[in-house]
Amino acid sequence: MRETSYPITVAVLAGGQGSRMGGLDKGMMSFQGLPLVQQVLERLKAQTNAPIFISANRSLAQYRALGYPVVEDIASGFQGPLMGLLSVLRVSSTPWTLCVPCDTPFLPADLLVRFEQALVEQHPENPWDILIAADPRQTHPVIALIRTALADDLAAFLASGERRMMAWYRRHSWQILEFAQTQAFQNLNTLEDLAAAIEGKNNGL
Image 1 (spheres, rainbow, N blue to C red):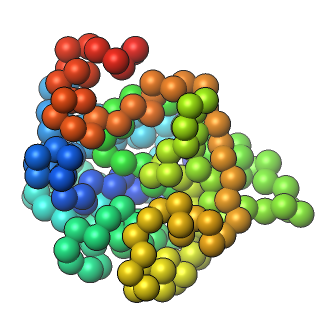
Image 2 (cartoon, rainbow, N blue to C red):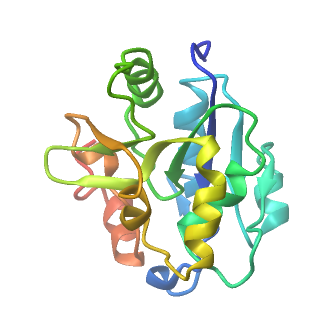
């Protein structure tokens, strides 16, 4: 574990309905002998001593047993990752909050380093509020560093009925942080994705 050089809180989003996983709790699906969410937590805790929260809406005892604070959505009904993010922003005590999904067990080993470096290098004449991870093929909106003070704006956005992450990001100053490792951001979104990764297919790691 390395010392965090910038005040960041980390939110692991595991509060979804699991519709693409047949309604199963995705974070609790087993991969390489551990729940997916624990695989993500292990990747993160090796990189930082920053506070880490788990956003979850079921299997709460199992999530709490992992040793991290669990934050339930402040509104019911599985309203998507932005609701989980808002719920963590409300309890975050740091200026910045990094969100990551619970189904990305191959996250880059330098994820926190790169985001912190971007904060340090942020140009005072061209500041941004949101920094989104990307690889050479695509952006990954659920992996993003967000100014915690945007919580009220996010609450208003959700109250309007909107749920799309990029639609909310576009209300603010945002930039892309590109990583070279395409496979590091692989999502195990479905039972088929999970089975392929267990068999060692498509992960390239």
